[in-house]
Length: 512
Image 1 (cartoon, rainbow, N blue to C red):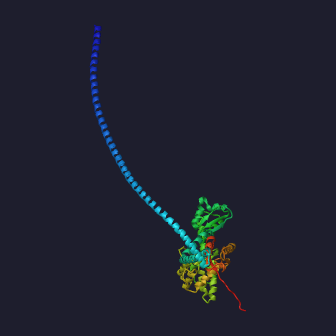
Image 2 (image 1 turned 90 degrees about the horizontal axis):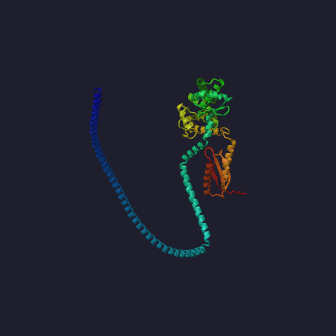
Image 3 (image 1 turned 180 degrees about the vertical axis):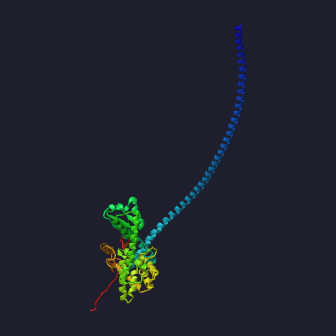
């Protein structure tokens, strides 16, 4: 019974499994068919959408292409229109060229005919000219060449006269602008010698015993030299020059303060920023005291009294200023003494003259640097410190900056020139001076017709003597201009050079 139950159970299990398989397969197939239908439906929708998209893109592309084609057709139409216009213009131009060619041909034919006529007339004219020339030669007794030479000579003379008149007009015009031209020449002269003059008048050399001191003066990271430059206002140049330090500044008083301060610092050996400031302040006070003392001593030596203290200080500052290598204080003393002597001889007040002579260059050492000539600045300073009117006028007029209103003015002007012109007063190398005079004379002698030359007034005037039989009066004017231009182009000279060409004829006889 047990075995039968097992068999029945197995059979029931198999039958149930078969039925379950049948039912599962049927349900799976139904589900599969549903999925297939759903996929087909979705695919159909996607297909329709894609077809719509493709149609839309096709339509858009078609519209774009149609638009592009329309634009291209428009451009082609425009190009065709332009080509038609150009073709029309070319046709017109061709017609015009052809018309002008025809006209040119007609003109050429006419000109050829006229040339034939002209050749004939020229032959006739040559014959007539030959006959007339023979008649003129017979009447005048001159050949054609001689007459031509005489005509050329007369034309030359006429041209020379006209040229000289033109030159004279130009010179007259130049005289009207002489002041501007003179300023230009002065500026050019300043530019030529500016470097040398600046070096001479703005540099002081401080000598040291050994180059080891240079390092101490410079200090760590340059602190000492920066402190010294800041305290003195002087640029200190420490370079490879052995046993020398260059002090550079336009103010001579500052350079002197820097020199004395350096001397004290090097002698003392203590060189540091605090010590530098202390020494510079002390030296500045000493120099200021010395300036005042120098001014007082100068006025006492000259017997001048009642000067304003500020004028005395300015006079003391002259000690540190030079002009053309001449010490300004020494120049002022010389001028003062010369003024006193000249005033005494002329019966004027020698004390006033001496006072004006001493003060005439105070405008060269002002505390400020105004844009005024030193003569006018000196006059203003004198007026400021209550000097007499005639003394102020003498100061302002010694370079003709203002009109002379007193007799002291020409005396101061003359004595100033005498002091500056004294041989040896102002620095100038004798060899260079002699060479310049010789060059002036030789330059003028190189011109034809010049017999003698004399450089006078220290090279400021050149006298040129020409032969009366070699050069006429018109040529003398052009000769002076040529010599002046050549001197200006080839030579370096102070101020201006006056060229005087002398031509004269003398007849000397004796009655016995």
